[in-house]
Image 1 (cartoon, rainbow, N blue to C red):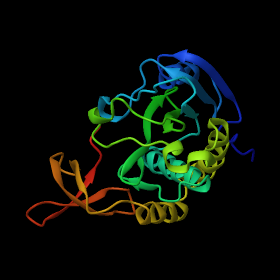
Image 2: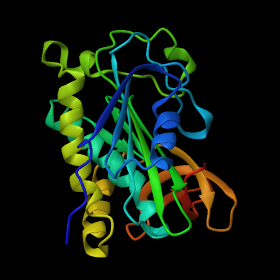
Image 3: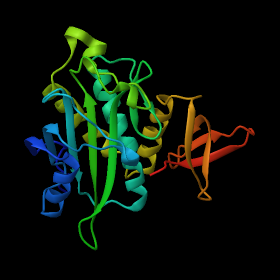
Length: 251
């Protein structure tokens, strides 16, 4: 059986575009193969989860990439993709020197209590039979300051601010990320592999911070995140009453 191409085996690089997610969607629907990476040196309309913006101050300061995942994915597997993607980012930046990088549920990478990277996953129906998803990843690489930092819920940070002269290039980070994403993505289809991935994700997750989500009954809940439910990645949130509620992310 022929294995899927590795992530980043095909790379399309653009200078200035609206967002890598927009371009990747078009390419995915036009037949781009699994693993294709859409990159930009500058985005005019980058976005994150829940309508948040992802702005880069100057060209080439951030890694901004969307990967096209076109394996036949079940609904169960699609729900696992954000965890695989965020773990891949965490491992990549850690391997390049950001040893304090950890995960914040559902899919942010933070370091020294500041946001280093964000992940946005959008599901895509390529055809009636075939499912796919777009994995958008933004990592702050060489920025030295963030003029709009006060506008963000969590203060941003870059690899340059963490590693100084040891900061990797955007290309070095991309290469490491592609390798880690290929490995993590291969683990979501097998329940045994997924349990190992989820256990590692849970071990790297920040706990005891304020968190909100949607309960299994469809009700918004808020409280302190205590742990991760390994079978499906739901957050276990302790409400002010002391009740523990399993919650999924707010979309």
